[in-house]
Length: 401
Image (cartoon, rainbow, N blue to C red; front, side, top):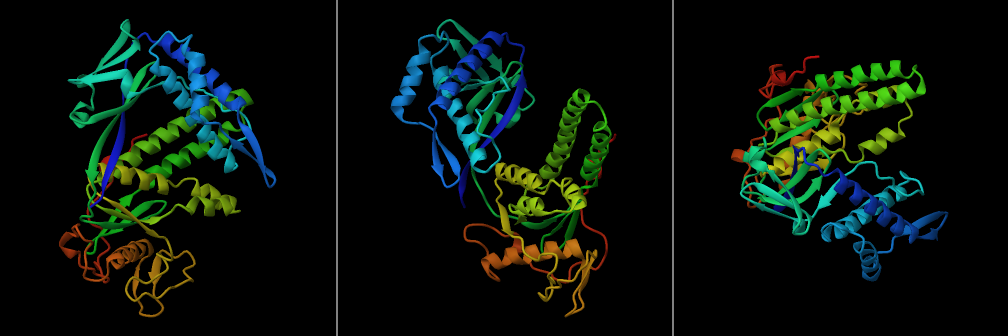
């Protein structure tokens, strides 16, 4: 079993008077970012200019010495600002090389301060953050936070201080295991699963409905004047994102106490980008396949369960009973095998193929060494003949609008 170091973040509001400190930090951070930007060398490679960011220790020391003279707060904040400036530039460089960013210096829009472990101490649930050495500090008691029972006893990592809240990160080492696995086929309106004995279905219609409601609102907003349109679009995009993420988190929580097996959909976005059909692009924009997978993955890992990804290839076109590939489905909901006559809901059939591929990873009759497959999970290609699915209902999570 592998051991992973996992990190989780929580947010706690505060009413501390730290505006001047954060503003001063942002001024220095912007100045450091300007200095780093001006030293970038642009090397021509083919028809493109590749940015080379200077990172040698002599240059870093030069930057630190320049700004630490005028800095009135704890000196380690300068180190934090330098680290943050490099992080911003590295992120910009990756996006630039992918063609997603222009040859322009990144603009800092949000105000926050990264607080290293050397700038705070943590005892008995109370965080004490140094602002000015031996002169000024702030304290935040985590024992009153809603998440205290979840983080009690865990190590704290880097903190992020904002004007109205503190974001803390907690770390723990987890030995991941493969136990009680279930294979999932994720679609636009449902997630269909199979665990070797039973079929499962989770309804995603609520998430699709939220996307559709806000799509219609955005169409109406497009007819408004530019200033009003921009403001309303930003408002409704934020609301749509928050409502969808809330349901995705609740769905992921349901599946976080076991091993989940998915198709690897990393290339899905590229396929969507190549699609020229406007109606297909609109339909694809309402899915959250990859985000849901990632939510389930990190929640499961936090509970000690591995998440497994398999190659996505003909899972809905292959007969889960005999292996025949029916390439002429024509969008039908029911899969019909032309070879053996097997009939099943297309999405349930896909989940069984994913399950079969999962078992084939280990070879028939073998479980992964050091891990536990639930009672060897007998494969049942025939499945349940009834139309009813088992458990995992989403009724308790329906959103009232």
